[in-house]
Length: 267
Image 1 (cartoon, rainbow, N blue to C red):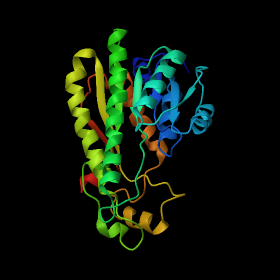
Image 2 (image 1 turned 135 degrees about the vertical axis):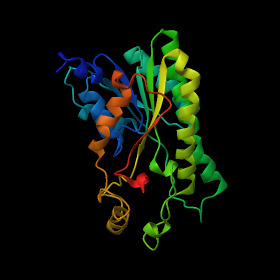
Image 3 (image 1 turned 30 degrees about the vertical axis):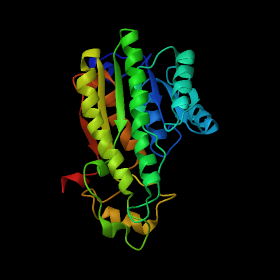
């Protein structure tokens, strides 16, 4: 698998690359990390809970006999960002790809969210930026490029449907919408400033990918009616997109938002 024979195959391969994936133990993060590992990358799996990170790293495929790494990281703690990135470089010596995926969630909707909760949710964007800047500075220091992938959401592009949530659960959190919209704009901003450093920054925006183990069945039914493809997304359907953004297959792409939403935002 590591010996490719065609140029197209080579464009999508990530052999000898180190990919740092935050929230790698989560519902979507685990699929993203798996896709990068399948493409040949050595994956650094992070989670706020180091035991979850270790389990996630152990479960990743090793088609090129890669040794994956587990690190504890909390976006909301600057000291954690410092120690986590230092540990990553101590163990891998480089980071070629960053997927800013994880975040500390909030369940508070517009009716109940406090100033403190709203501000805390937006602080995830600070963590995304600080970690991305570390990767950029590291890439410049070693005179190499890098690919930074921010995880946005269709809810950073469009509003939600209030009737999809009514009488089932809290509305989609307003602070989450503000966070994801900000991440999309931050992607554009960093992309133009870092292009000269050969550091590409793009945003992957998933649409409806609810975890069926947690989301109410009635909510999933209502959301499905809003999707042209008439179903929810499956985590594995993000793997191709993230490998594309991480690899040389997207070498002339930066500052862009790739939306995987079953057609939701096409209405």
